[in-house]
Image (cartoon, rainbow over all chains, first blue to last red; front, side, top):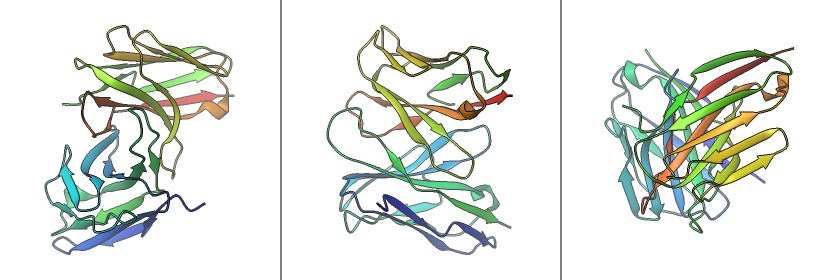
Length: 114
Length: 111
């Protein structure tokens, strides 16, 4: 069972560079989300999607773009990387059924912007 | 400003001690979850509570949802080194698809 797969696991970018963090899930989940985790801040929601073609902003969306062309994939794009985007990024997916469905997480991408 | 406030932020205790972690908000939740995260991994679900006043037990862990569905607690009895990790509460507000996380409580259980 692959679950939620994130690539890459580690990345170093220079300020101003762009890149895409990949996220794929094989559980046919409708909901997918991107979070960033900084020391002492827990997880903060960047963007989320409730289905293919539908995305919306979370708590900290600035500097990030997303799209959802398929149920399986939910890439996160950094348009022009800044040192403030140094963080660990987690992708999560969950099914639509019920109000308390479990969120499944990838192993994270550790991004450093220098 | 964090929508979900967790306390304490950090807890270091001796094996065998009991502890309680709190998750509070001024908003009403449709559901609340507790996750545990280990270094280098994503969070993993421990429990979901949906009814005000609900109590759930998972071995030595007891989870309680406040009557007004604005707060929750996690109590660990006779903590063991294997309980070490980051404990996160997460909640959905009514009619929202978004799952919001608290700031986390980092627990260290010393042998």
